[in-house]
Image 1: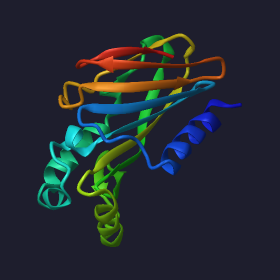
Image 2: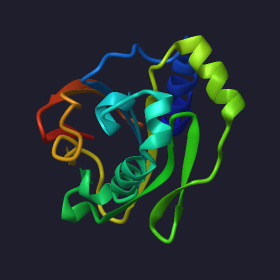
Image 3: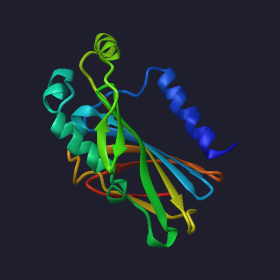
Image 4: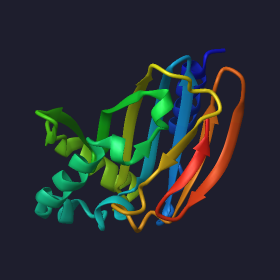
Length: 186
């Protein structure tokens, strides 16, 4: 079975079961390797990315949210591949506070405002916002057995621990990354 299908299955089963456990300081990074394409999905509490989770605070802090989203729009500084793999990475989807953020001239732009969904989310889950970022890397060089360096801690210091799952055509592994930077074998 192709890694992308497995990756999608894991993501969908996580959503169907009510999503991930919301633990401050902990994120989840899912990585799927499909040939020379690498898919990454980062999920973390809003508190760890933005410094707050409240929908009310989010409405008052749009500049800070956009600043953090713009950091995510430059994933090459957050997820560093070896030069030999010659990978180009881009953000494909960024979501927080029940809104989607899309790239416009390389900057994040809030382009969907779903107040009705926001109210439903608050009623169902309280005031715990999640961040979800999806990224895609296209590589020209070898990608098997390379080390991906994850550098989230410098820009997101509240994110102390990241549970990592890696799926490829040949293997499946999991690990936990800690600190400002750590490596993951693909």
